[in-house]
Image 1 (cartoon, rainbow, N blue to C red):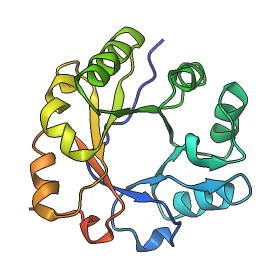
Image 2 (cartoon, one colour):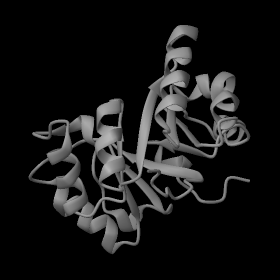
Image 3 (cartoon, rainbow, N blue to C red):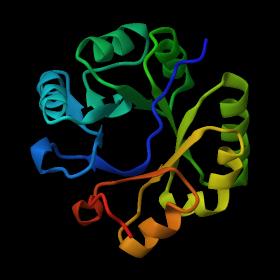
Length: 183
């Protein structure tokens, strides 16, 4: 069963430190760091500000992997889950929650393994890290017909523009790049 995933496009605000979501000029937000006590209020604040909220479950203090963790995230209202772990993808798919598989493109072997996993498991959204590696491998994953995001080490508007020619979206914690209009 495939989960219908929203197409993530443009710039995504990545939050290592939570800020008032009304100050974020883009629609999609990645919460990359939190804990079980703060996360429900952070998700609620983002939703009230009209944001789509994706949570990196690997960096939520007190949250483990698995079915209960995915169900918890769904119960607090997240729009999607991010993780490097395929086991979490399978639980998210069963729970019908959009899932982003993070891929670290460290070398050609890592890319080959990730490509094989994405293809054989039916993953339909990936985030390739670091951002510069997407210039080399983004098209490979796009050829699978999936939504491709990149992030990490993207600091300038020039880098952002170059990447958005290869991928669908760029996640960045650089507030100066959060503007919707990148032309």
